[in-house]
Image 1 (cartoon, rainbow, N blue to C red):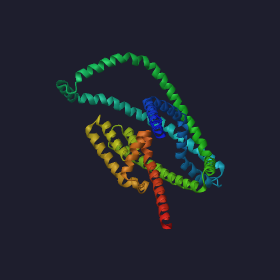
Image 2 (spheres, one colour; image 1 turned 90 degrees about the vertical axis):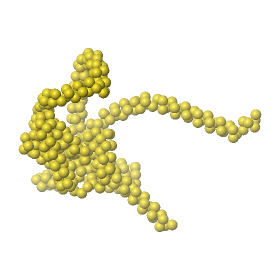
Image 3 (cartoon, rainbow, N blue to C red; image 1 turned 30 degrees about the horizontal axis):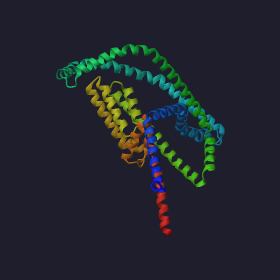
Image 4 (cartoon, one colour; image 1 turned 30 degrees about the vertical axis):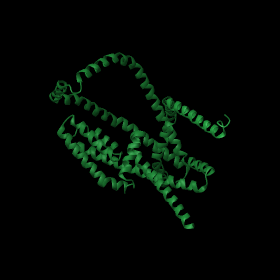
Length: 390
């Protein structure tokens, strides 16, 4: 008995017992993974909702900073004939830019949105006309499906009708609650927007102080070489983002303006709505212009298929002009990113952050690739240096 329970066997049994216990713990952990994931998701969503106004404020301040800087260093310093770094220049330039920014938002809301609303109303009213004009084709197609019953349509329709009547009362009861929740949500979003504007205003005013404080903190935590390397990387990233955002915005504005004028000259329906959609979607590389052309074609097709084909042809020509001439002239050479990485950045950015992620994915992947290249070059240089010493 003593020989059987020796140290080797005892150690083996202990290891086996530990493996069994760890396996049970792992199984229980995986079994409760859904609840844990749901709990973490709720907490993360709460945290994101709390910090979202500040994230939006940082983004607004970052976008407006080049314009504020130009006002501060170029315009005000010449008009007031004093040093561009004067603290009052920053306050005056920030205030002026915010007044202009808010005026643009108000004017856009007051002048453009009503016209877009009219276009959307006309579009929705054109849909029944389109259906009436193609009623015979639609009825023939439905009769063919119903006769053949390829997709078991009769039973599916009956099931959906029963579900609709069953849920009708529930929807009606929940209507008032949904309206109240919508009002609360709209009020909350409005307050968040106002908070973001106020915070971004103070970020722009105290930008230099905030950057100096951040640099002091980094130098307290890391050595000077790492801090200087990080500052160089941030400067490169800033140049890449600013160049892309400003250049792409100008390019998209010109493309949208050309589309708007061209659609008006072609007497196309909904020219303002389609022109704005072309301008906004053009901000998304590769996919955006094609989506804008397809949407424009579909909208006009409700009124006239012939005009829709001409609109599609015009928008495709405009895309080619933008891709081959206008875009390279404004943005300069390509950002050094292959089409594969561009598509990857658009897909990943869109899945994580929506339309904004699709737009910012390209400069983000460009910055990441530059950082990876610098890291690889540094490691290879260190290895070559070690080999030379040997």
